[in-house]
Image (tube, rainbow, N blue to C red; front, top):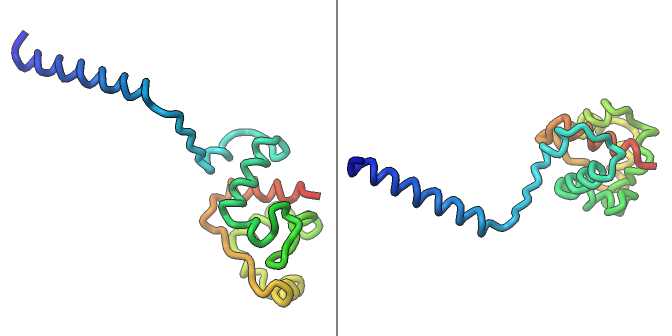
Length: 140
């Protein structure tokens, strides 16, 4: 065995030892990828999906206006019963571009009452918006 081969072998042994040591001392770090949550085939009614939807909606600050229970607040209307007004596709389109609905009578009344308008969520993937829409349409 040449000196170069000895150095390479020594390097590999040290590398493997350090790698093994890092795995033994590694803390459990669970990172939730919001996009990955929606890649599964779970239905909107399943507990983990509704919990994940609520988490995403909390991160998007929905609850700051619509309330923790989505029953509305002084800043925004209730999200309970939105299925009276929206189909799934309409709700997804609204979430992506709420200002395009600003001329409707219902939204003019909301503007007078709440003094603000819904922000756009165009940066959120359509699949995620679809799951959010499914969840919102199931609230009764």
